[in-house]
Amino acid sequence: MSGWKSVITSKTYWGIVIATIAHYKPGWIGDALTVFHVTDQTMLVAAIIFGIGALLAAYGRWVAKKQLTLTGKPPSGEPLQRY
Figure 1 (tube, rainbow, N blue to C red):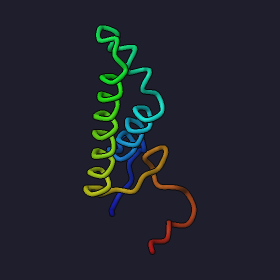
Figure 2 (figure 1 turned 180 degrees about the vertical axis):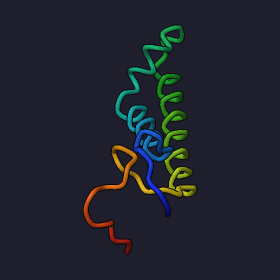
Figure 3 (figure 1 turned 90 degrees about the vertical axis):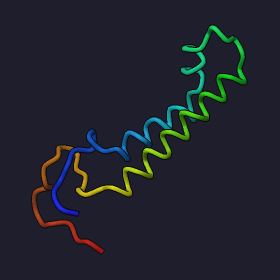
Figure 4 (figure 1 turned 60 degrees about the vertical axis):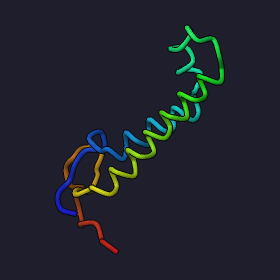
């Protein structure tokens, strides 16, 4: 890995956020699907969104080229050790 980037620009970060919201708050998805009024369809859509988020996180880790920081700049002080 060479260089630094902000967490906000990370595919892995956004995949984790999407998967977490789909897992813990499927009701938010249900509110958007009020036309159906069926919880099975809401859960199906939540499961699909969870899967997309998990795949995005895995893909983001696979193609990662830069280390993450909160600001996108290298941390001050000593460089991070790589194991």
